[in-house]
Length: 107
View 1 (cartoon, rainbow, N blue to C red):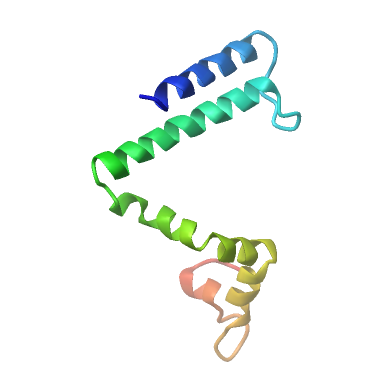
View 2 (view 1 turned 60 degrees about the vertical axis):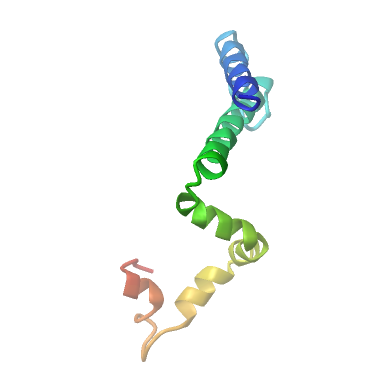
């Protein structure tokens, strides 16, 4: 409840500001946008906390745990375009037989 109550207050405050004339605007990081995203993140965090720590559903968050452990490698692969180069760079006999074609994605 210590996370849900402030998160809901921020969401309501964000919507009140939006409908009062201060619209959601990510480019300007308006106050309504900031309240909305902080409130949504707080509710999401509280939901994951209840699922994982209270009820013990760790299987549902395995991918998120893996991404947290390997976040720097994921960032490097995505930011430097190494992942697409890696996936298209390995092929069998001709360039059209790459990993993308194997999993059904047209490159």
